[in-house]
Length: 437
Image (cartoon, rainbow, N blue to C red; front, side, top):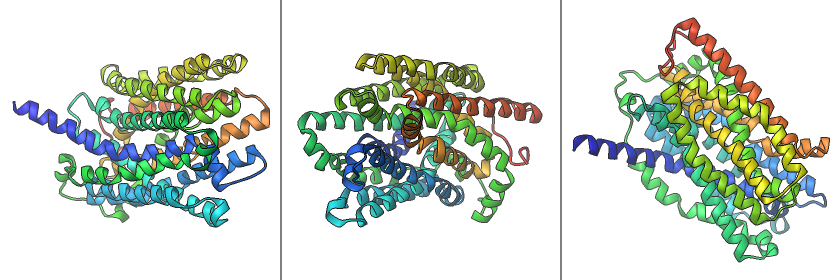
């Protein structure tokens, strides 16, 4: 009976901590899904390419703040605790969401509109810079022995729920509203929905328990000590950043960019593109936890090498075949294959990066590594794909971008393996601060 209650308590804590992560990703997905409408409202131009680039650059601007959020908010979490820090990040995300949802368009307030939208994105980015790290570390610290990969994978799984929810809402709106109304005001509805659920998420986070691991520590390093330790371990942070590259590039390619890629590049209907995105979210939700569980069973590196290797070999060819015969079915199959590779890699990668970070700077180190990667390979992936297609006139070129990200990931896994052999650290155990200096 006691074991059952304990298991239920852990499940509830997983739900509590993942719920705020849902809002963080939901807001980012909404911005990506409605890039064309948001661009028309805040960045009007005679050129569709210019409007899309301005919108996606604004989307990416939020990622520029993530390293700052990782350093400053990450040190706050490592010093004051996981619970307090995750409440702060949720509050910042709420401010950014309300800002973008409520500001009138360019036609009403002129240049103030795009400036405020960029400000909202920067605040969201500051919060998101440590949200993923804070949630991942929390889940790693409450995980039962031998199941850490499965537990930590729910950080990413909660993001997939956001993808599914945002895509479902978008499909309902596209069915209910004509295109002109959707472009005029319908795109604001998902943002308003995000604002409505904020109080519920705050309630969940306020009742979140601190982890036993953090409470058991007698000393908590000061922010200054954390900054110095992160600086000393810069090689490890850089290694983690390259390890995250494929996960970030693939995720934003198959979720945030898919609606635009499907409608603007493949010339499919918005409903078809959103339906594919919904299926991708469902696929990710199913396979990411399985990827984490598989890494618990056979080891992190076989999962990471297998997934990244297949991405390297197949991303460009499968997109080339899609461009040759664009259709709803072909887009769905292509995205589901990329989803499978992303899910397997992400399921093992998230927990692995938490394991290679020193304990005292686990949140700061993980968050900084993740944020540095997201700044380029995550947030700017839609803009980079849009620009590369425009530059090369090759509609399959996003596949080459994914292959490049896979090369970076494979290199990072190789160097992580060498480091483990050097320090004789068994896989699945944590690295001490001394060992990485």
